[in-house]
Image: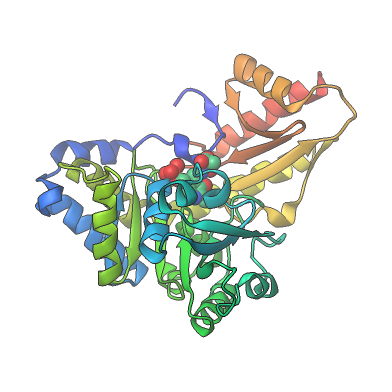
Length: 349
Ligand code: TLP
């Protein structure tokens, strides 16, 4: 990878080992259930997440959509964070394709939905004016407020509230392995309170495509049918599964390195006068930072100069703000190069 691409961990290339495994992968027609490599990946994912079954899906977006469709009927409602990926960045699939409405509530500074807000959002089932609340969606790590991991204890408390109120709980765990690495816990414990959980193979875990949806056997059977309905019944996808197996078995074990690199980048940025960020929010592989008004250059101009002159790429999140995401292809040395470039462009603006 030439550029120091910090826009996202979705930009990661597959590792050389993945490419070799993909080349060698044994394949079959997965719509017939005959792809041995995908079957192996799904068994591995279910076991590691502590769920009965798992399904390979084309993307995190497809995994979340299938979960909503599998849990809800048309006209039902889900409770979701107002700046969550599911609500903001998934093309309103739940409403467009599922007829499911979203009751949005604020995401707290620590990435959580408050229990009081969830409780207040649950509709009174006796009132015929209301849709039926069916589902709560959490996002772990929470991308909107800095890649913050949600704890086992918090997730359990939401699970208990859902059981008490007869609701389903889905976790958009696109980066759940980053949360497990941050807490040093077993990913199973973060998944346990949820009826379903999706996670991405194609972000910090470096697989070229795909995500996994996990849940009960019955839930996954319905999900498999829904995936077919959405055009996601794929054929010789053992080629992708081969990379996915390495993603789970190996790449999940090295995420702490990305987290240390993110900390180092955040510390370096906060040493630059005029650049601000909240160090407490830097807990996994994401950093959100902003420029003050001491210089006129804005985020769009700064990213253009950084890309053109230094080959460093950042994600612009507002007129003066950015997101940087660390990943496998961002070594400690590249963090220092990126920091020097950012400092130079800002100080000479
Ligand atoms: N996130 C992407 C963009 O879509 C914003 C990124 O660069 O961070 N859940 C969460 C929490 C995500 O961050 C993403 C992707 C998804 C779901 C969707 O995954 P894909 O891209 O596989 O559909």
